[in-house]
Length: 342
Ligand SMILES: Cc1cc2nc3c(=O)[nH]c(=O)nc-3n(C[C@H](O)[C@H](O)[C@H](O)COP(=O)(O)OP(=O)(O)OC[C@H]3O[C@@H](n4cnc5c(N)ncnc54)[C@H](O)[C@@H]3O)c2cc1C
Image (cartoon, rainbow, N blue to C red; front, side, top):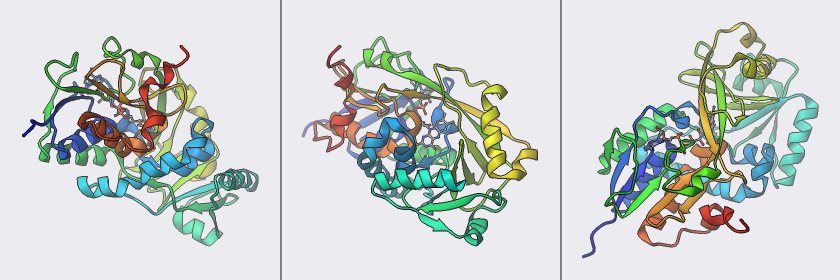
């Protein structure tokens, strides 16, 4: 009988934990290492699993709705496996008539259509919403709460036999594979040169812990709002090139204004700020698959969609380690795609 592959996973964010769990479930012997002090974007994220609004609003990934939907469709199985609560009630676009008409046109281009929300229903779903805003409900975009989800993934991985270490990974050592899922961190770029192609994008999010915020996630002009057990999260800034996680009220000012425009009551409310650093590739999709460095598999660069893409990335990582077909979306995520033409 052949022995199971030994794998070190570097990074305990959404991508590393999901990959570690999938690898252990596939029979690999898995060690997950994370020093825990380098910032973890996954713990800051709003947890939107938003294939449709991301494809509609983000030009980089507009052409990849099929891939984003495929990733989202893997979530019920992963959530069931790890005991993660998945909110599948949908997401409402809320805004002026003109903005919603633009959203409607974008959805039409994607072959989709939202359901108009009568004001009475909008008030039930999002109490306190500005009275002049209108709404459109889309069932396709879901949500989870990122911190409880990280905890659940960790517990499921532990129960599946993954060994955890509180240390930074520096090399593959004697393991068959090293999976690099280190987010925006560049410390392993010497080992895997593809990491040098990642751009950091700082993201700040407002946390209104005293505000419940309604029953569905909202997308508005200049912000989104996600209600949860820790209050209402309103995000998020996109600050390319920045790697710090310090609150910056100047950069946050447009977000604060947009939040007050969506929910006038928020203009007076106190809020906390969390910040994380996303990693982005040049084409908006992550690098998932074998590195040019033998024995190394990458799962990095998920930009604004690390939670959404985590189960798809985990499946591809596992297929690479097991020498199996990585499925129909692996070619678009190949780390080597940026090497052609260099
Ligand atoms: C404000 C904000 C809002 C967001 N909202 C959403 C959202 O709604 N939906 C969504 O899908 N995505 C969202 N994202 C994006 C998402 O958070 C990221 O794409 C995702 O978390 C990336 O996960 P990751 O596992 O790649 O990296 P991270 O979560 O950053 O984890 C990387 C881990 O690697 C560890 N590490 C670093 N170096 C080493 C080393 N040498 N050895 C071992 N470990 C190491 C770090 O300590 C860290 O724990 C948001 C991001 C931000 C900042």
